[in-house]
Length: 500
Image (tube, rainbow, N blue to C red; front, side, top):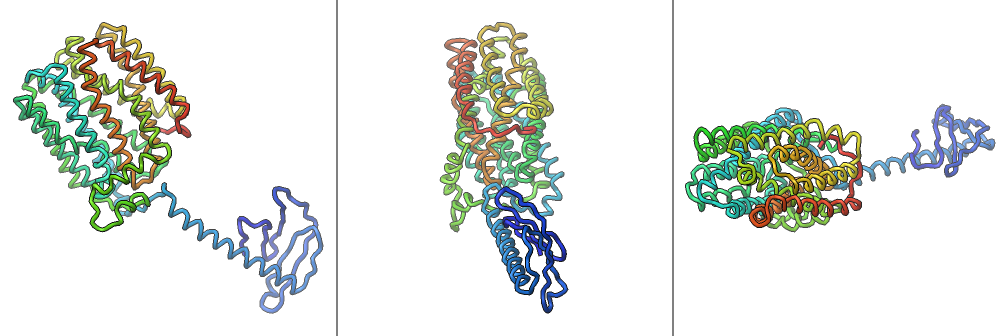
């Protein structure tokens, strides 16, 4: 009969040894006594190893027999309690339908292809937008306001989009995201005035394809491989980031800006078809946090705002989001004004600008595919965050001194590498800070921080560049990253992430 794991004595029947210990001190065992039962137990002797000789009689046997029964009952009770407790742990592995699990490879492939297609279409319009806005009469300040409208709509939609995925499923969320992209790019392709161009930014309130794709691969993967699957999404996005600007620059140079936007709309429409055909509806088991806002019959999506708010106050989540905000402000300003800087500061034409964006995509591709994985295997998260932040501080300082395009191209390498590393570490940490059924909401908050940066960045960047010049972006970067360095000692990172 097996013994309890928590008992102080290990016992065995049928000539198995019995040892006793008190606390951590093992006692010397020198006496072997065989106890024989009576009646039906006469053929089941118990051998006891002890320091003193025991009397072999039925009474002694019956006493040990009762002790065995109590130990076994306690063991079974402990196992039952362990099973009950594990169901209440907020980071449990949720049950996934076996048919869906068997189709993971197809789902992942289609998701990665759609991420590539989304990035391609997105960067076609990113490279085209400054030329289209300038063609329609926009100055740098107006261009910054245009970028701000886009970022504000994304900021408003990000958290709710994540909750839509948690409540209605990732398939519905992805169809919604690609529909928003299709509408936005189509309106951009039909824009022959600035008001219509501003209107084309509004459907982007639901254009959160990367967030929806992260929700799918996060839910359909074990926590131990989560960083790897998220990193592979970044790799697919990087390929699209390389292809998109080059394609957009080619179409713009040989046709016009509106044609490039319509091409992007067609690519997004293709993604909708792929989602409808290959991505299944994935039923979710709700965590206790989710049940709080969804247990009432007829509860609407806006009733989940309180649940989204609660996630911010979970341990580590709020701090990580704030750290992401501080680190992201200067790079957000630079990214929002990048195409305009390329035109005004360095005099690039559309094709050169597209090649520059593709160069950044190649660097991101390298980091997502090789660089981050190699670094995180050798250095823990805190040290990598410190290294990246110091690199960004130095790079921004150098930015205040450069005047030639070749110097800017060289500087983009450490800037892009450090940004990829910081984003990967923070995103992986945030997704592990909540239960799997709430990953959509926390990724929505993560996206909201990114969108908040993009809401502020274009207007701030346009004012800074027009008033103080290009070097002012470098000063902002030095200040923000010095603040980030001071916050790192409070960072809740526990260890290296393997490949995010």
